[in-house]
Image (cartoon, rainbow, N blue to C red):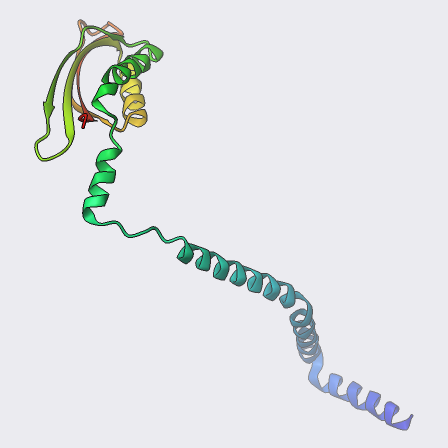
Length: 182
């Protein structure tokens, strides 16, 4: 029991000698030890869980590696992604459908087809005179190019009858790439 009294007296002398800065230092040290024992454990558990997920995802990605294709096979797969030339009427209907959806008036269309040498592809040049509000024509072009990757915009010209007219006339030249029948 005497040793407890001596320990208490020694502790009080030490605290008085250290001053308020010493007391704050000891309190901060005690807080740091307590936080390390409780707060960091949850963070460490979460970090370990994330490391495990990362390892399992890495393993699954390595397992599902795509087979290596030869250059010829890749080229054949690329060409197979184009629509068949037999589907040209359906493509033209989709093109005109996008125009109707944006209130763009299309007149007669002129088109020419030409084979692309050295490939199984055919290039169809399509020239369309259109009328409508400028923003609607731009939106129509955006819709067509986003929805129909086989279509490329080759030329575009605008003409307005007079400065006060909201409508413009445009000549749109598309190129459509199709796969020739085998």
